[in-house]
Amino acid sequence: MKVTCIGTGSSGNCFYVESELGTGVFFDAGCPPTKILDLGISIANKPFYVTHEHGDHAKYALELQDKYGAIIYCSDLTFDALNLCKKCSVQRLKDFYPKKKCYVQGIKVIHNAADPCAFYADIDDERMLYIADAGSPPELPEDIAPDVLIVEANYTPKRMAGNAEKSDSMLYVSGRVSSGVGHLSAREAAQLIEPYLDYADLIILFHQSENNFDYTEYYNDMEISDTFKAKAQFAKPGMTWNSIPF
Ligand SMILES: [Zn+2]
Ligand SMILES: [Zn+2]
Image 1 (tube, rainbow, N blue to C red):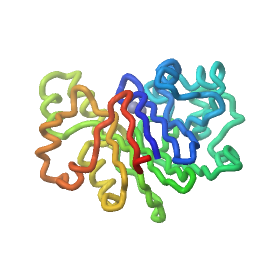
Image 2: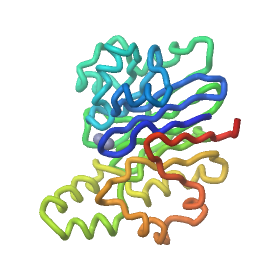
Image 3: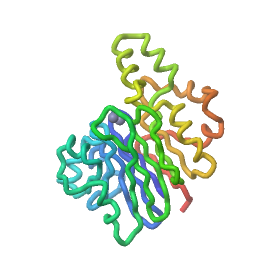
Image 4: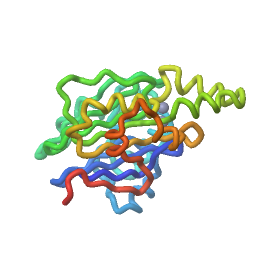
């Protein structure tokens, strides 16, 4: 499985995942279509699974659909919030690549949006989990076995607490982020991924906050295992990973 980060963080999130057999799927639509095309990735007739309606995840969904022929999938309430055509829905996922195997399942997450979800996908027998904004680690189905995990790790607790003391606006941001309907901390992301750590081929952490994520704190955090730190990688726009070397 090949993973490309098109964008990560509050300026816009979008990932492209392609199986070894060439089935391509996007997660989130928070980056301009030109940024995707500039990376040599085609858009027409490809599915975009949008986690929720916030701009950094869905700002370009309508444009991708209307001007570039992308097919947008998200929960019904997210569709309402986005005002997209209602012909597409998560239920149609199984029809999308009829000759190939591509199943994508929505998983409920808690976040301050209409009906946010994470996605578990089986693409040509390669399995992956994509979790974007989530106020707390979501309850995951018991039978999943992701080879690739792309998970939000938004902040480190000490840095955020320190920032909250500096000003009222930072205190407000901190309260919103860590309120249980905001974002996942690096520690929460690690706890969530831990059960899959041994056999996962690729672990990507994304959506790091510019102000509230301290890499030194992350590497010194005793509650995150060294095995996890050695394996997990941070996403940057334009980066590509191969979970199984081609
Ligand atoms: Zn959000
Ligand atoms: Zn976000």
